[in-house]
Image (cartoon, rainbow, N blue to C red; front, side):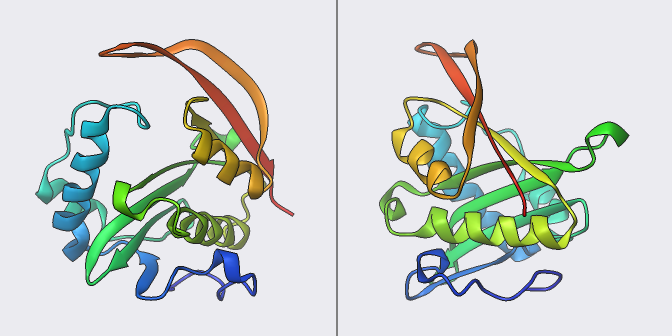
Amino acid sequence: MSGMPEESADPSARPPDGVQVRPARPRDAATYLAMWREVVQERRFVRTETVRGTLREYRKQFRDGVTNDHARLMALADGRVIGALFIERMAHPVNRHIATLGMAVERSWRGRGIGSALLAAALRWARSAGVEKVTLEVYPSNEAAVALYRKFGFAEEGRLERQSRKSYGYEDELIMSRFIS
């Protein structure tokens, strides 16, 4: 992975056989959008309920998959995006030591190590970029994601009540963070 350290020795951080985790490339945009639309249609795990980005916009965004300010990571099986994680350093000078992340995995691939592989790659990027803290927001009802983040050392720092107004009602959000050693 360009600009990222080697794979972790921890086998749970490796993608399953036949799955590759790497920085996004422009040619990933079409299958990324297909995966993203599927996740968004579930209306359960991500904030948005509408896919707004176009194929052209994602192709352009994926030209620089990894920089010192962000990493756009894809998990692919048979050349098709099955999961994605975006991690980005905060822009303000007082917060530049912090990065925030968001992740999505196609329903049929959940529980098979894709999230672990993406998260391990994101934390490797964070270390290599000099990030000191990684933070995220997750719905408490997304128990599998909360458990995954805890497995990787994230701890709850707060709860935002009724933070997301979804089509079916309000969702609280947990703020989870971990410091990079």
